[in-house]
Image (tube, rainbow, N blue to C red; front, side, top):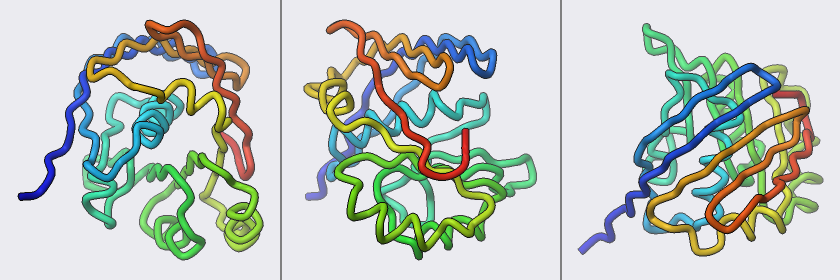
Length: 179
């Protein structure tokens, strides 16, 4: 019997001072059986960073032809393809051919990945890459409750998440392009 995805109820109070976005969002997101809590947290951070009312979660790990998040036009063109993790250069090139804009929110130990992948994709004009601070991410993602309530503020490129355990500053470093 196949393992089922785990649903998470999310209440996200988003304050993005950099873009003038103020939203109180409620939604359910599924965590794939092979997905870590860290990856789920990064998907939620990416959702907030590039929030648009039409932005949707893709099937991600369940379907390699879909991203973690995407924004589609009414005629089904992919306007913004958002990946998380450490995809290889081939994957990023493949994604850049399918969307007008591609963003990556990378996390984990990035030193080796940066040396191999970033150099190979720096010529892609529609790609931007940001890295999440690993220690802060681990703290935020530790023992995520199934019912999440986050207040997430973005100001001058800095990201702050407040949950029932307190406030977490999540450092972001732009490795390629910009938000």
